[in-house]
Length: 398
Image 1: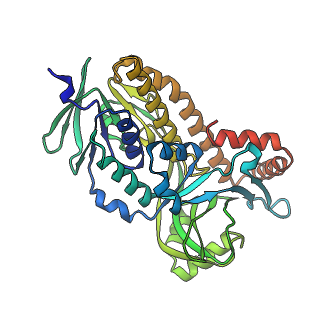
Image 2 (image 1 turned 135 degrees about the vertical axis):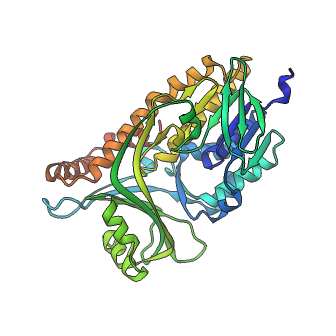
Image 3 (image 1 turned 90 degrees about the vertical axis):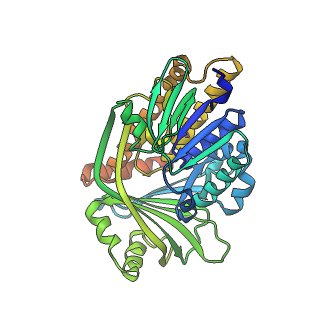
């Protein structure tokens, strides 16, 4: 049987993580066939943005699409944390993290999802190593010593060397492989929306800690003089549901108050979206000729810009391992190669999921002692450049 007939890699799921994975592998001249169950024409309607840190920006540069994305992307030059949740001590405490503390120009960029998807998909469609199947999900797969076979809903059968799940937190591949997960729920919802505001953001991201969860304001790049930002508000489910149901004028008043007036008068722009907040970690990231990445492998609360950036770290690691394997004439889907990935990523992703879990629990706490401790820690950070630098490097994955 001639192996050259078969794609080396099969990817299930063509969200942002799947697109980035496919692009990096295609650059290595690996034939990649992707299966996306939903209509990708709807991708352009995604109004969300993602705060990508510098390692992810490096990936976009490596693929060769950053020049098209940068004009629409907002530099993230400062990160401010304000503790407004402790009533036991007068006034909020705050700390500002600046990129110059670690000798970089900025922490990353806030990138519109729709622009990123468009550019990645456009680049892939021009690549002869890429094949796309839309509206035909993988429903079965069988792993063998030398290859893996997938079957789709419409009856297509395909052989490959490696199957990558980019399907998200409800990954069907993970479930078929009977890979268990550790999951935590918080009775918490996240709501994301875009706003205009009367005060300039000055390239600063601000995270306000209160009871219930963080309220984060992330600057947007606009062509008008009107300043705009994306807001990610995490809070108890009842609080978010009540805010979600408000008319726009009442909502604007509530959000302006919630933001402590630091962006002035705020007005909602566009629609509100909400979803349950949870943490989840797969007990392994690999099985026979199969690898889980991104939210198929790990889910965390949307705080600290760690979710999708951790997924990009997965992709970088897998790309580098596959590249090295190819140079050494190794089978990229072999147990030996996938074990390297699991060793490299499992403890790192596990510790990050656990760390973000703790941060979220601390941010939503109603315990007066913990709120005082949280405020005292921010005050300490203001005095310690060494700890600030350490936290910055950890956040950037260094």
